[in-house]
Amino acid sequence: MCLNGMKFDLTAFFGKKENVYLVLALSFGLIMAVFNPPFDGVPDEHAHYWKSWAVAEGNWHCTDQDAIPQTAFDLPSQIKPVKYPGVEGGEKFVVAGLAQRLKAVDTGGNVVIKGSVCTVLPFGYLPQAIGLDLGRLFHLSPLADFYLARILNLLAAVFVTYLAIRIVPFGKVLLMLVGLLPMTIQQFASLGYDALHISLIMLFIAYVLRLANDKKEIRKKEIVILALLSIVALNVKPGYFPVAAIVFLLPSAKFSDKRKYWATVAGVASLNIVAFMLIRVFLNGGEGVVNGVNPNDQLLFVAAHPLHFLFVMLDTIYGRLSFLVESFLFKPGWLKQSMPFYYYFLVIVGMVLLTRNDDDAGAEVSLTNRQRFILLGTFLASFCLVYLSMYLVWTKVGADKISGVQGRYLLGIFPLLLFTFYKSKFNLRFDFIRKHHNMAFTFFAILTFFLALRTMYGMYYDKSLKTQSVYIQYLESER
Image (cartoon, rainbow, N blue to C red; front, top):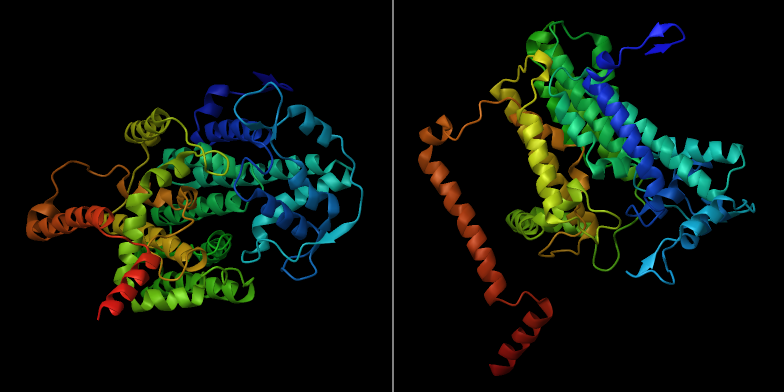
């Protein structure tokens, strides 16, 4: 192929995994951005839409006086599925209605919304805000602004993921697979902050692996980039600061002395903990203290009953495992409908086969056992913190189930788990188990009895607090 006298080698272009990802992600992403219905196709997109407008209007911190265009405030209520005559299956979106909205005119005027999505940094809404500002500049309709904002968010997230795949020294296929999951592309092509949250975490992971694998000594420039990238990537969405622990993948030999090594790794990890705490203090929108949900009381409850929380987390995972997997791979809309079982089976089998049969273009996978344990430990810590966060801000105090956890919350950190086992010497004989057989047997017994007791508890005992209180009253009356 020739472009203006210059030869373009398609084979060489598509021989690079990052280029394959770029073409596929943009193609599927643009289709998703337009095809996925507004507001009904992505959870809470109306709130993200209002937040994007607030950022576009310069309201970077939620106040009681945040104002957005009246037409933007009204749009989510105007774009709804309706019962369409002659069409079975309930309410549907009418394409003609969407086309009509694309021609609508902004009537002007603002309305106060008193803040939306107040506990997150505005950085995660910059691409969307730019899209809305561009739409306003060209006098587009509110719905056209919406689609343009989706596309700008998609472009930003895909480019960041492309950069991550390009710089990671090995395991490019792992980032490609996560970056091309239908659920990931849905979030990229939406107005939510998940787009930059997922893509920037993958970029941070890729950069740390690059520094750890590079033969050269780590310089001040790389340390500054590492610190800044961690602060931005791990705080687009609150609660992912444990991912900063992967800086311990960096070998101390890459630094001029031990003091510089410890100052760097401990400094980056501590910096993200402090950033998380400051963000929670300054961006506390007061959400949560409603209907029995109180983060402070819940935290005190967890501190007093840590084993109870551990049981609740394991019980929630066990009871909601299918939902967790589905909402990780792809569960469309507001997570009420599932894809057929064979779909999830094919996706999982395909990911395994593509990972196990990737030659990685001859790249050397130089992960030591220590580094693999760091990756696994970081994933598990981040995984547990996701559940703890939702227990604090989305669940009634002392509840026996954790509400609100979705598989898409794990998309950004999932590469940590994949890299843990990537190109490892996988077989069913483990020296560790042979050497610690009694300990392994004990763990197996605990796990199997936990599952058995959990089932028996559900079969034989009433978990209703109301019923328990009535029973206590009955016992007291019998005395």
